[in-house]
Image (cartoon, rainbow, N blue to C red; front, side, top):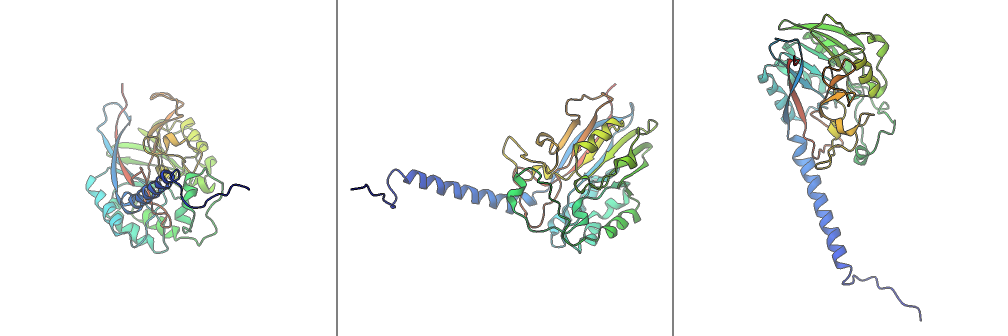
Length: 318
């Protein structure tokens, strides 16, 4: 007679069942934390960037990115509005401001007095196209090459015009300059590399050697863009797009970056190339903002709070 297999739980299976139950509870608690608390735990980061000429007084640069703003996100709007109290000398906006057809006036209102501060900006993919539903698991996988360009266009021209009407410089595939408190900045920027809208040829060439500070600006920190800016002699590059990994692991940090940048540099201040040293003419500083928002269809962050960064530019070491 063949042995039969029971489908009822045995004593040996109970620890497994308990373990699965505990894992399910832990996962549910983690999801509740990520969606209910951390995604709204807006945080101001601070960092020092030594790029000013010797003897210069420090300058404050507010780096904003990836707001992904919708009209109903009142807490985020109020938090962004309050950043004007920092009294920055310069604002750098690295894109993905929008997440809704009616977001342009909301973004402009939230920025408020910051629009009276000298500023520069580039656009990101989510300024151009409306967000769509997507599987959250995709945030844990490498970039698959698919781009969200089949959804309705967002009013990016209104956003651009709203910024430029207040004096901010549009750096999408453009070079320009500003003088801030007596310090002359030379900028180069590209349109969104994630959508392959970047035109590096339009901004190619050595950075202005007579400028006091040379900054590259882009939305998505693809290596081709970072290499070009570093090779042309820009002191630093500011970018966003990565959301800092968005769903990160404790201690380890980001798993993916949604571009070809290594996860170890998904957010914060680093060097590019990664093995370059300050003062290396072939290298530049790289600051990647983890950003302030998410897609409205995946409103979760884990071990990666939404952020803006106040960069204090200081004199280069002698």
